[in-house]
Image 1 (cartoon, one colour):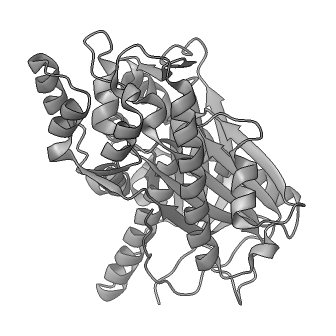
Image 2 (image 1 turned 30 degrees about the horizontal axis):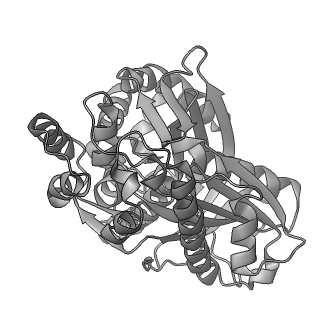
Length: 399
């Protein structure tokens, strides 16, 4: 597994009493790095497929997704140990879960340790754990194994969110915000962890969406520490979580459709998903923004941390809201570097967003430019179709 460092920042802006804040971010990845340019050859070799039409289609998809690199748990060693994973129609859910359960725990532990180290307080100060994954199924759940792996107190209060897909990270953040604001002094570890092994299958003309998944999705883990009323002598709040909402769109439950079968998880995404998001995103954003008097005139003054479900979704949002190209650059960078890593990806977007905010502050100070709004939106979209959104304030300032 692997993790990375983050940029340094100065003292935070004034924090509103009682409001939840993100106090630290962390991430971790499996060791296997996949370069998109080599994915097609490796995938068809590992699955013993020689269909030229499917190969051409996957090659096209690999270019249109804009993904350049991804980390994955799947490896030649795993396929040698479990060759049945690459054979069509075999019941392999037990083998997949054996691999996934261990992998997501290992990645979640590493991402959490990175996050806790950046936070700067002892692990014993954590009071709650929110764990998110769509890549495992067991009883007890991954929340317990993560708590055990970290050595958390048995009194740590746990919440587990399963199979929320791409909106899971933002949903976990909403839940952690509620816990922080209703339990003064609490400190919540939010951890997400995902692997595509649960849905890995050989290419098939009968399942065209599997090729989209092969070209788009990646593995990894993310972590955040959330709490209100930060101790500024130790903690450095990054973002304040002002308002969080969730909406589902009636009669769209088949748009993102997933089932756990004897062959693992099977997903289907309807072609109209980007259009559905485009048609509903503006009204959803306006609900959040209205709580502090912001309007559509403020779109390009705000920061945007959007889960990159794919380039089509980002393009549709940019078009509908008439956003400047740089407004979704953190999302596009996360997609390019890590693929769509499901619930984890919002953590990677927020890390890039912080980096961009710090650079922009430095540039504005150097050129005596007017600072942009401190407000921004954290958005994600998942099965339901479900919209998750948080109106947030940037609290980090450049030294």
